[in-house]
Image (tube, rainbow, N blue to C red):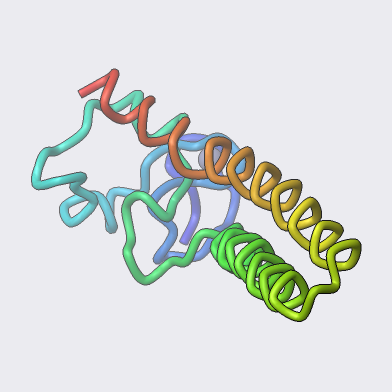
Length: 122
Ligand SMILES: [Zn+2]
C-alpha cells in the first residue's frame, strides 16, 4: 500500500509507515496494547513488535543467547571447581559474571526502557 501522508510504498501488514511513521489505517483497529487503544503519538515512537505479536523483535535471539552464555559459564565454572580446577573454574565464573552483566544491560535497553515508555504515556 501507499502511505496516506508521505506517499511511500510499504507492506500492508506494517502498523505504520517506515518512512514517516504515519499509522497504517488498515492495521490500526487491532493495534491495541493491553486492550487499550494508544494515543496517536504512540505510533511514532514504539517499534512495530508492540502492536503485532507475530512480529518478533530482532533482539529476541540476542537476548536469549546472552542469557544462555552466563548460565553455561556458571555450570562449567562450578564443574571445574568441583574437579578441583580452581583457576579454570574461577575464570569461567568471572566470564559468566561479565556476560551476565552484558545481558542485563541488553535486557534493560531492549525490554525495560520501551516498556517503561509505554507505561509512562498510557
Ligand atoms: Zn509515510
